[in-house]
Length: 260
Image (cartoon, rainbow, N blue to C red; front, top):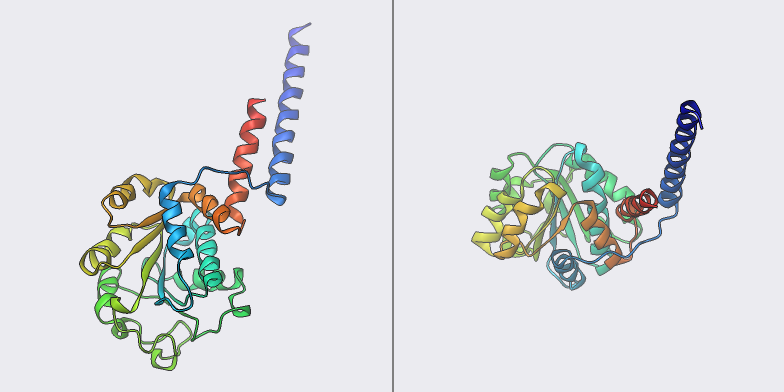
């Protein structure tokens, strides 16, 4: 066999493999398999907490502390967390301290889960959206909520919203859930978890896991979702299979194909 023929065959082989990978990725993404994943203890702790909530629980703070640049990794866990809260019938208020786009992300999340079909705005959930100040805002929210959340994202005064009008400080909430991509985790720890003993649950990017793990081990963070892999674990636990499980399925199947 000549050198030219060998190169042509190699090129054909590579082209075939490339097409197989592309087709496999598309099919797996459109029709996710839901390949089982080992559930990490910190993801299970997060799930167990939300799964233990009910209609009679105190409201939860759901804080969107991410930027639009992190949407690919941070938005899927936000969606499945919100779905789980709705499933449990737990009331919650949505805030955000990292970037002004928190309000837009919040509205996208509401649309994604079609929340208006099952939840009544103002009674079951409230969307305050972005609150400026970062750590100052988080600290003030803990002690004097009406000062930093005077109206919701739509301009409605807090006192006109049944769920929010009686919320004054940290003692009125069962926990904080922060979906974080900007390093806001330590601000919640300093101003809520440590001084007021408010349970803190985080959804973070994969690169933040080593840092947050230390807080989890000493009990300042009660559970966390680590990156898209952690989000896939949470989707498996809740049964709400979505973007995260699609991504992990694609990675798993293409790696197997590559090995074969």
